[in-house]
Image (cartoon, rainbow, N blue to C red; front, top):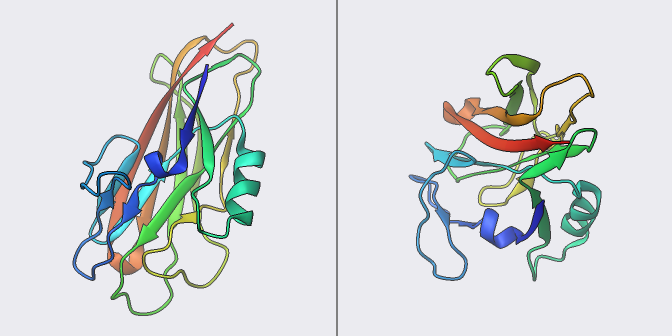
Length: 180
């Protein structure tokens, strides 16, 4: 089952401040609390999304003129053999000296808690630096699917994100249910 979700609801706006990084709801303007899939720490913010329509969402994201936020379809469950992509969106505040280069590493846990796959830390952004307050889509997106011999049930996708210039790190988690 997939649910359409306006990117604004997932990637609420970032308040620019050298001292803090906070996600805000675009409709109410109120700060939103960290969750398992959306966190901020020491000027660094990251959001983990599981989508089964990544190519169309990415195309809409890349071609956006910034006047409206693109929609991303979030997948809560998939059938065995379906493919989802798991990108991380990230941002940071001002006041960072030198190039800003976030990194991300992934881990997938099977329903019994065992590790089925791991990917070590890699650069999340292909350029030397990012602008403060902008939201970036990670260039290292995890492709996830369940083989016929693997168990059905709830899989956990974990993204470890770090921003060394800010000495900040967050761990994001999304659960996806795999059915027949």
